[in-house]
Structures are given as structure tokens and as C-alpha cells.
Picture 1 (cartoon, protein in one colour):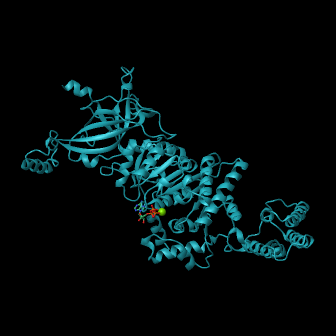
Picture 2 (cartoon, protein in one colour):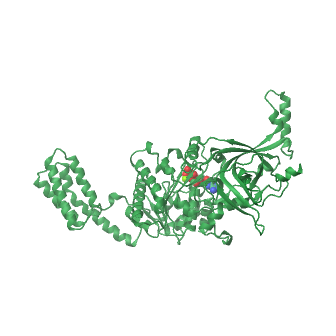
Picture 3 (cartoon, rainbow, N blue to C red):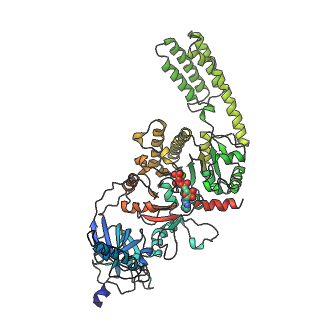
Length: 639
Ligand SMILES: Nc1ncnc2c1ncn2[C@@H]1O[C@H](COP(=O)(O)OP(=O)(O)OP(=O)(O)O)[C@@H](O)[C@H]1O
Ligand SMILES: [Mg+2]
């Protein structure tokens, strides 16, 4: 008896990378059940899937110590191979997806048992849970392979244990002891590689400053220390990420948290934020007020004073009545970074636009040959003018151009005897009015040199992005306008990057309320469709050129799935609709059992799975994010 027990490790001190909660956790792998593979993701690991059952001896504290998401290790058959002298142990790793207690007495009850007896047993069981009686109670665990093996080498001369993770699934030994990875091991598993690659040394960080962690791992919370979670911010940005949770799940809060970390802990990554709900000027107020970070807020209409700025920004309910919030925003306004968007209609047209007008007039004039002749003559004159003055299609028109246009138009009306009641005549005789728009542009140009509050055009936004500004927030609630901006900016930036052969600095395009920007193609039309296609292209190709994307939404089911498949990191909060969870499960290869855990999440709790940005590929983990409002609270307190 003692011999077998020894062999099975039960009485041995466990390896220091595991924990048994001071002897309270004793479990065995009882069954490995093959499960059907349903997902079709490109990133799906190629290996069989199993659902494992583990039986754990009852201990009254274990139910509160064990948590779903914890990682367990069981020796596998590969450890038997060629292993007689070697001191390497090989374990298969699993993540706990479900935990439940069983009571022997209750199991024995059926609906036909004598009723008083049923009550007797049920009442008795309440007291039983308070004991450590292993004979009547047991804890059962369901766990899913994470497709990694843990290789542990115990022969290090200094007595230190060396271990590594090897990708792939190995069949575990049924009946063998189950070990729980302890907090330190889990922390190293997720963080060590990331910290090394990002050059972060958190131990040396002075505690006054915030550190780059996104939050803490939701594990071992009832037992010991808090384990921080770090992600590789460069890879997060470059390989795109998604944030999915139902409304009120804390997406915007979490996103502002991530953006803050990116700005503070990457060297030069830039952020372009499409803020259709106009909440980020407040959610990131501390950064906008920070003079070390160049930033810009682009609003829908001009704001002349701090009061107007305060009114046009959405505040979380807790801060709505808070006078300090106003002071914070006043500080942001006083930095002079807020401006507004100037629609293309009030801007000097390009030669191409004028030529397009002529094309349109031609199309309207079919069947009227003298109109067509008149238009062709104007066209010729303009073309001559362009060649003489070195203008190309994308050049802005100038005084000379307008003069030629206006004169040749009036002349053509006379030559071809166009009726003065015709639309073409009205167009031709009013071309001189373009002069007014030239003047406006000139004035604006002059003003822009001195002050900022005369608005920015789309070209100026591109200039801003190419300059030193690291945070550009487009807070425009009109869907048509902001989508148009999104289309132009994604197209232009991608185009420019392709020609520059440039990867850095990374630019992160952030789409909160992404259902507005990346709609399902089969159900969208017009500008919605155009925007979705453009963003999809950005995600597909941007990676190569250092352009990243972030998609945050509450209804993932209505999104463009090809765009979603480009995301390499995902944060999933509560998704109450099974359909949404299915989309996540299928697109990102996260087990449905694990996803169901998100149903009990409070705002700020996330399931994180990443192909590239955590220390371990595609192993889901539950995390609790910092509340971004605390940062804001600190900031406005100081005002
Ligand atoms: N990490 C967190 N810790 C504690 N509370 C949080 C956390 N994150 C968010 N909350 C709370 O949840 C509320 C909703 O957050 P938020 O506005 O970010 O949700 P959302 O998912 O963006 O909602 P919507 O879909 O309406 O845009 C916040 O007012 C905040 O109080
Ligand atoms: Mg939101």
C-alpha cells in the first residue's frame, strides 16, 4: 500500500511550481472523453480535443480556493518513454472549465424515495458541507487541454527547477495525480516572455508610477497574492485586437485603459481613435492634459470656449454632476488641442472635381449635341490651362483656373447658342463664384498658421497623423461624416505606408462601437459597406506596414467576419446572446465551455486569448482590468 502511494506521489512533497493549497487539494484524473471539434478558425491548433474529468477529495475550503480558469498538469504517456534514468517529467496541461461538488447521499436520492427521507438527507447535507468528510462528498472538475506540455527538469545542480512549455497535445495518464500550477508559475507562463521582449523590469519600477500591466489574473484571488497580467503592447497593436461585451460591460473603460498603457509604455506608437459616442475626451482626459504627449481632439462643430467643450463631451454618469470633472476638461481645452472638422464642401475643389462636374453635365446632356460641343470646348480650354500651369488632377484650383473656366464657359454658351434657361447656362454663368472659395481657403491657411480653432480638413488630419501627434481623437457623432473620415484615412494611410516602405511608428486605428464601421457586408449598403470594406482591407494589409486595428463592439454577430478573422488578440466580456458567443467561439477558437464562464463576469472582467501578445499562444485566461475611472478620478482631483 505505502509503496503504491509513494509511486503515485501522494505523500511526496510536490514540485515547487505546483500548489496543493497546503495539502487540501488532492485530485486524480478520472476520465478523458473525446469531444467533437466544431471550430473552423485559421488559428485553430491542430490536435484532438478532449474533455477531462477530475475527481478531487472533498475539503470544505477547496470549493472557494479552486477557480475556473486555473491550470492543471497531469503526467502524460510521453513521460514514460525513454524516461528511466532521465529526471525530466512531462505533463499535459489543462484549463479548468467547470467545478461542482457532489454529495453521495443526494446522488442516491431519486424522486420516488420516501419523501420525509428525501428531506432528511437534503437537510443533513447542509451540515456535511461544513465538515471535511471525504466519504460522502467529492469535488468534480471538468477541464480542457490547452495543447501544451510542461517539461520539468529536476536535476539542476543548484537545486533549481527548470521547466519549459512545448506545444502539442499528449495523452495524459488516466488515474494519475492532478497538480495545480501555482500563482508564480502562472504569472511566469503569461508574463515572463512579454516582460523580456518589452524590456520591462517591474521589480525596479518605483511604485508611485503606474506600471504597464493591464490588470490582474482572476485566479488565486481567495488564497494569496495578486498576479498582474502583462501583454506585449507592440504585438497587440500590430496584430489587431478586439473587445467584445454587451452594453455596459466596460468596453470603453477597458479600451481607454489599454490606450493609456500604449501611450505611456511604447516608444512611439500613435493612436487614431474614432469616437462616435464622443466619450474619449473625458475618458482619456489625463492624457489630453499631459503636456508630454502631443494630442488632438477633432470635434464635429467649432467650440469657442471651455464651457462649450465641456457640454459637447459625454461624461460617465458618476461624473456628470461633478464640478471637478469640469475643471479637468477646462484644463484639456486650455491646451488648445481641440479643434473641429471642416467638411470638404467648404474647401477649395481640386481640378479633378471640376472635370468631374463637366463629365456629369455631359451625361445629363445626351441627345443635345450642341450642349455636348459646348462642354467639350470648356474641357479643352481647361486642359490647356492645366498643362500650361503644371496642374494635375489632384491639384487645387487657383485664380487662373477659375478665370479660364469662367470665361471659356460663357464663351461656349454664346458660340453654341445654349438657351439662357438651360441648367448648363446657369452653371456656366456662375463659375466666377468659385473665387469666393479660393479666398476662404487663403484666409483659413493664414489663420491656421497662428491659431488652431478654424478647423481641420481631411488633408490636415493626415498631416497631423504624420507629424508628432501621438493621440488623435475624432469625436464626431454624425455617422456619415465619421465614416467618410474613416474611409479616407484608412485608405490614404495604407497607401502612403505602402509607398514609404515604412513600418514604424505603428499607428493603431481604434473603432469603438465597431458595428458602425465594420458591418456585415451582406446586410449593408452605401457608405456602410464602403467603410466596412475599407476597414477590412486595412486589417488585412495593415499588419505588414505597421498599421494596427482595434474593434470594440457589443454585437459581434452583425460584424464583417473576414475583418474579425484578422484579429489576433481578443478580450471577451459578458455576451448574453448564445449566438454572439458562438461567433466568438467559431471565429477565435475559444471553447464554448470557457466562454460560458463570461456570463458571470462583472464589468471589467475579461477573458483574454491571444495568438501573439501574451507569453503563451492561444491559452485563454480570465483577467480583471483596472478601472479606468480611478485614473480619471486621480487626475481631476488634482485640478
Ligand atoms: N474595470 C472596471 N471596474 C469597475 N467598474 C467598471 C470597470 N469597467 C467598467 N466599469 C463600470 O461599467 C460602466 C460601463 O462601462 P463602459 O461605458 O466602459 O461600458 P461599455 O461596454 O463601453 O458600454 P456601451 O456598450 O454602452 O458603450 C462604467 O460606468 C463603470 O462604472
Ligand atoms: Mg462604450
